[in-house]
Image (tube, rainbow, N blue to C red):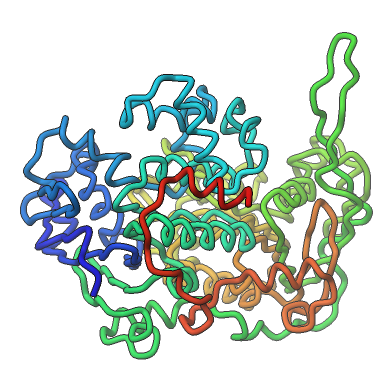
Length: 558
């Protein structure tokens, strides 16, 4: 057994009177990965923030326990002051967060942000720090690293931004890296690249890794041990092989059962009918630059897309980030104006309508977005939130809106007494149910769901997809369902369309596309899907060895 880099013993953390972490104990050995899993609110992120003593900045309080960091200079992290902690953060312990866009400073260049680590912890000058920053970007396989140093975060894709975060985290060759949902928002191909990169760099540096995730496929791919948290307590801690073969705790078994698995099957296709949505030759362009004495350029995000969605049918749309999925979804409802093509909704031509007519036509099509908290007005009570579309379209009067709100809440599995609460008083899964209730208020024929479960943990995501399937059976709804989780797509879709660089490259029944793919890109996409089975993972990395981060760039060049 490799000696531990970190041990957490009987950790207790509170927020006011609420105890969020209740006597948690675990250890992370050098060169190995412990996956910390559990539902939202189980205490995973609070535990991670406590290790770095950042939980205190969030209003939390470490009430008891010990956090020991070993190595050349062993230290008990709860017993040192803030100045000593600052010397450890980013140096001996680093962290990669879920959303790099909110973690990176939008007004500083990539070079400034990576070099800051070398300036702060290694005492380098600006010129030397920038040189090391380029080496760090090369180490995480960022192409044209020298040019990227002068770019800003918004100029990079999601995958590249996450690589920048990893470069910052690895800059000082930490003993421990904490990764808090680092791949949740990434598509499967980018996720596969990031996971492979993290395993490779871990093996080269020999660092320990605490990996927080709700994706069981990712757990099987990257973890050596699995620790399961529930309601602030650690209910199981096991080797990854034992965990997947025979989980001991009932909650662990429920988590594994809730995880979507490719091959579980799709719903039975509805009878053939007239299409609710018809899209023909849709093109959407965005203007890039241009101005005085300079010609404008255009980027085609959607290139001649044609598709149909029948009554009571779900068409799943998959593809990498940046392929045009969300732009297509917004173009279908003319939230983004298409440049060419035809859109027919319930037999009506949306592409030829003026704004007033379009507003009335949109009653037949509603949208559910990825982030429910950003979709709901925080100042409105639920009674107004879920009935607002119905009020706009004249479906309900103010006098009867509360009665409609109660009916909608019950339809999506929420209690009637929630009608007077506000969005911040609900969990993520409950907020997504509110968004679905809001969409249902006008009795639409089509719901466009853009990544509606990607930010939710597996058990809540399962509840939401179950709800959508049940509503489809009850109401005869049609769905255009967008997701980068192909197992979720299989579970809800009758047919699947695969999008690549703005084009639909393959369409067909779910089983045909997933198990007899015809296009090379579809095959590549499917090969990147992480499987919730540790036996499918690649060979383990070699034994850890001590190297400088600059060695990585040399290995790449060779």
